[in-house]
Structures are given as C-alpha cells and as structure tokens.
Image (cartoon, rainbow, N blue to C red; front, side, top):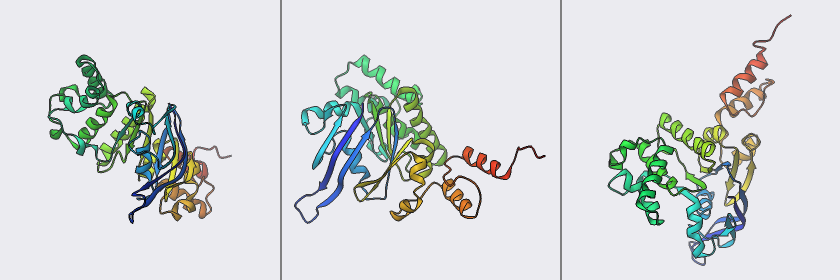
Length: 286
C-alpha cells in the first residue's frame, strides 16, 4: 500500500500577512513494509508532510494518493484514514476515556464494528504493544508514561492500519522505556508487515532502526537514501543544523586522524569489528 506524493506544496494562511510555505514541490514514495525516518530541523516541514499522508491536510498544490486513493476527495478520506494511522507527539495527552478498553475501542466503534469485533480488535492491539490485558479496566491516567504511550499506539493499531506514522515516538521517555518503544515499533513492522514512518530528532534511533532516511529543509527534500549514504553527507547535514549519529562522528574523526576504518559506522557491532580489523585483533601473527 504505497503512498505517492507528487509535486506537493502546502501554504499556511495563504493570502494573509501570516502566509508560510511549509512544503515546496515534494516528490516522495513510501513503499510497503519499509521503515522510513523523516528528519529535519524544527520548521523544516516534517509534521506538515506526515499530516498529508492520511488527508488531515490536503495539498495546496499537487497530489497525494494512498493505495491509489486521492486524499483530495473528501468522501475518500475515511478510507485513507482507515489505512494510515498517525500517533502524534506525546499521544498520551490525547487519552480521554475512563478506561484503557474504552480509549482503545474508540476508533473501531466509530468505524462501525460490532461489540464482539471491537473487543477482539482491542485485545489484539494490546497484545501487539505488549500491554497486559489486566489493564483493560484501569484508568489510562493511572499508568506509567511508557504504558500510556503504548495505549495511545494501541488505539491506532486497533483500526488495523497498513501504515503507522509516529511523530517523535520516544519524546520525553527515559532511555529504557525509549528502547522498549523502538523495539516494539520494529517488531510491528517485522511481524505484522506494517509500514512504519517516524519523525525524530534522535540520529541514533534513525541509525539503528530505519532502512531509509528522508531529510527535509525549508519544506524541501534535500537528502533521501539508506542511512549509510545519508549520514555519509556530514557536511550537508551540518550545513542545515543536523548532526550525524555519535558513532559516525567518532569514526569520521578516526579517519581524519589516519585510521583505516570506515567513516560511516552506525552500530556498536560494526564499530567493534572495524576497530578489531584495524588493530589486527584475532589475526594470526607469523
């Protein structure tokens, strides 16, 4: 279920003194079962772009199609939103029902599912985000921050989307909970074949989990490719105020000091192997 974005521009408050062009001639395709990270400075257009993915925003110019369905037609947007779910930054702030069950069930109920179907969808979504079913009748506001975020994710997953869009999914979480949430997102892609798109400022998250990186600046795509290629463009990234992952920065420094190691290293495993190879660790010495 690809998303096709063709020649898309978007302007806030057109024709007023507050007019801002947030997107400028965007061309982008999100393929099935991919894990795409969208990065860029604040104000680069990231959040505006992802809101086009399920018709929350309609282009000022250009076309957005989800599985061949245009978001331009108002009557088709419900179909699009049933296939593309968005979890916004700090989604726990959007929880409002008395119990975990009612919060997760809200979407499926409004889609017209029977009570039995809703119950099954809620339980399946809770299992998918590793939430104990014993929490069903608890207030979502009595849960930990990480649990609340997973309840919010479950509320989107209960509508059985083919694509999950997450805006800063680990913002405000402690390191342990952040890793749990990221591993959970990766499992959803691997086990349920859900296409994942995340917006994030954390370059380490991008390096470890994404298989494609899209870089925005001033409403335009300036880089697009696999993480190693994108993070190899250190000067280009720094010129727009972005950093590379810490390991990449370290190995670039080592290369500059004369080490014979790759300049772009994304994982600890790659780093350990590169250093062992350079130092000759484990090699037989005649």
